[in-house]
Image 1 (cartoon, rainbow over the protein chains, first blue to last red):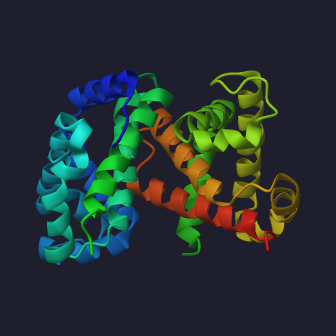
Image 2: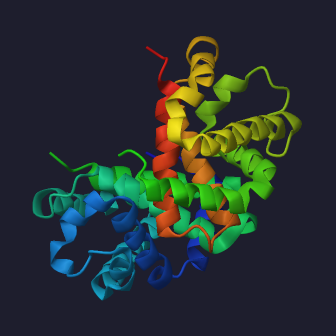
Length: 148
Length: 143
């Protein structure tokens, strides 16, 4: 089981409270598709992803970004049981969506960078970064856990 | 995934904008690396003080970022210009090359916090590629 310090719990809750999933989610997913263009393989049904501008303006990307980011709410609310909480989602990503789990790690990095840019160094301190990245690492691990 | 002409241009232009804060960038990146990835502290057991903002952290951050600035200026021949540094890391420091990626991630975080508007997806990608190329050049002499 993952051990969280009180400081980490506080940092995660506080940061989550500030995050607008409708803002950060679309930014993070757009960054994933731009910076790691091979990730576009999973989004053939999303329409025009041919240029960075197209990706940034694509409404399906925005909607999906919001959905994915919103999914973190479950993890924030179930910090002590993330593995179980994401078990079904993990199965789905493996059996139905066939997503290479390395993409979860890379999306998490994009999320962290968008959060860093949004909140700057006085909010996204080294300690907050530690807690937040640990949190995302646990989510990433849970999402890859049920692959077989 | 080698650097295109556009990547090099993007990196140079962005680095010119940010190099005024080079000291802070380096110091903050090293501080974050030590905090967020505590296993990296194993390389600095000889320091008296590993806390963010401490003298050794600031000094080391300065050294690292000066090397990056140098690499930006020699972006057309990273392997050649980093030969000596690679030998240092391979034979003397013996830093596990996996840590280059860790430091790179923290550099990106610092740049995102300090320059949110300039750190566009295009700049992000070019920097990501550049730091990876840097890491490769630094690992050149390892084996």
